[in-house]
Length: 73
Image 1 (tube, rainbow, N blue to C red):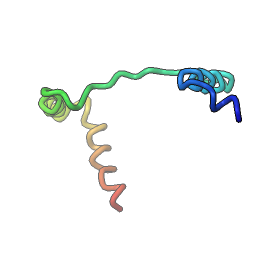
Image 2: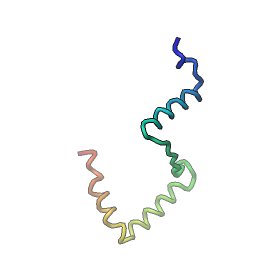
Image 3: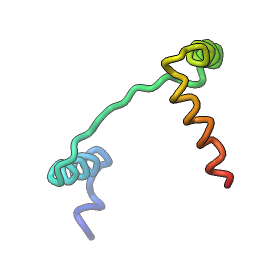
């Protein structure tokens, strides 16, 4: 029987992370907005309206419009 099978999940995770660190990687935690919250959709609409009215955002919005159909092509 392998000693790997006797490890707790916490020990397996520790070994896995140690292997990744030896490969030169490091963990990164990213916090993102919770799309399930009550005000999320409304805030998205508010920000989209602001971006649509902004001359500074026009090039980015034009680019997004151009590539929106690439996936279905």
